[in-house]
Amino acid sequence: MEKRILFLLIISFISLFFISCSSQITYKGEFAFIPEKPQTGQEVTLLYKPANPKFSPQDELFAKVYIFDKEVRQASDVKMNYRDGGWTGSFTVSAQGAGILLQFKAGEKNDNNNEKGFLIPLFTKDGQKQAELSAAYADAFVGWGRGYLELNADPNFVNGLYTEAFKADSSLLKKYGRTYVAANQRYLSPDAFEQLRNEIDQKIESGLTNTYEELEALQISYTQKKNIEKADYYYRLIEEKYPKSDLIQSTLLNKVRAAKDAGEKLKLSDNFIERFPGSKYLMDLHNIIINEFRNSKKYSEVLDYAKKYKADIAPYTLAQIPDRMLSDSADLDLAYQITELGIEISKQAAANPAKYCSPYLTPKDFTEEQNYYMSMLLLSKTKILFKRDKSQAASEAANLAFSLSEGKDSGINELYAEILVKLKNYQEAVKLTSRFISEGYGSPRIKELYKESVINTIGSEIAAEDGLAELEAAAKEKMRNKLTGEMINQPSPDFTLTNLKGEIVTLSSLKGKVVVIDFWATWCGPCKSSFPGMQQAVDNFKEDSGVEFLFINTWERVQNKKENAEKFIAEKKYSFNVLMDTDNKVITSYKVRGIPTKFILDKNGNTRFISVGFGGDTNALVEELSMMISLLRN
Image (cartoon, rainbow, N blue to C red; front, side, top):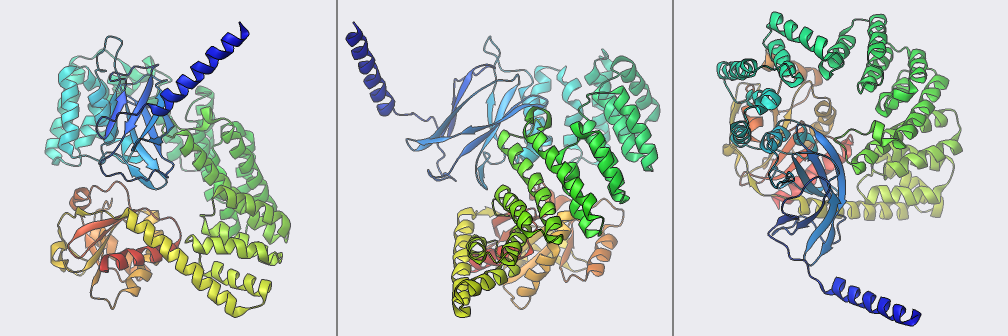
């Protein structure tokens, strides 16, 4: 009997083996999912086989998956496995929602279905789509999806989604009317926008049942229209019926933020904590108070307050304070205590993602975010220990920071290498600086430390120079291959703008040149941080008639935009050709989601590269931009 059972088990295993090895996945188009009508609680299998894949079979590919309705209900990472010429992955729909939106990512490469996301409707038990799906999908383009899925669509497409939803169920106006109005503000004339807003308010008021969604929409709308009487009326109604609602809490939080001094902020803060214990806004509240102390350089108060409310302090709140204290030449012992408390809080957050993770972050995103804050704190700890001549302890802290930042932070890399050289650990210094340089993170100081370490290891300056040349060549080749793989080819909207000198510049007139377009604003911190590097790039090509740089000033919030831009450029002494996009039409035509964003155009006027943001490394910016220009010229 035992032998028979064993024999049957063996036969079953062999059968299963052949079934699993021989069954082939059938892909349905470029993207599909199983089952066809997924519901909450079911497992969904993704089938992804693009005609022109952005990913290779060797890439570690994930789907960033968001279950959503009016809000994101759950964010997750789904590992995709390459098989039979495409990728497949599965997950369970473990939250209620109207649908699922996702994009595919591998490192910096992504596919978000031409900025529309891959959409999976969720169905009711009787096989019907969720009524609010279209409105919720439209909301994603207006709000959260722009940042987390890089969604972007023509306003007609988004309005079509809202119209479809409101036609099917007019009650959805109460829930989505406010974001529908906001979606149109940028594209309508002031009069048309005001008319639309009034129409939506009237429709909500005509069937008012005093739900929170209705009252919130009306209160916010009348506040924006500066109708104080009606705004106050609806606020009092909300306060009476929904005293612990988001609107009441966020209003009081804004009062704390607007208070003129620390004493008033603390008084309002104590009132908030008493009224709303356990509020989801507590971390924001504590961040406001600690920033007030930080801005006043009252660092001992920062420490005392953070200790008192440690359980509800977010890691980002303390992450940058120790480094600021070092810049201010503040007390090192106090800076070290704040650093250690920040590290403790970061560990606390990493161990409790349910409390600290935003619903918009996938687990991978949350881990990356926590690693970033922890690496910042460890870098501060390293600096403090190094200043105290505790080089060995500094080396250990730097090693942890280096591991968390994956060797991609030039500040951490430089300090780590400095410490290794000071400890005369030249072999390890050679190993690490070689890696930094070959991977494209070789700052001038890193290169100096590499040569010093090689000379102290083998005693040859020639070997150090030759080695550096080889590493730099490897870094350039790596960058060339990376950029070649990222190269796109899409039309660039033409425009005509006036520069600060009063000259008219038309993009199409620059055909035959490589053109770098940089969208920026004077209030944009990353834009301004990138400008020393951009000035260096402009200087590098100032004698080259085949390259043109255009700095488009846009999204400004001041009355006299031209005067504002002129003043900034003059104060900083930049030699930029600044064009004024005063009505924001050009940046809208380029579908820019955030600034700084650079478009690098070839000689035919087509966009070949898009660079978003600034990573903080001036040398890397200049080298990458130079390589892009070189590739397009050749």
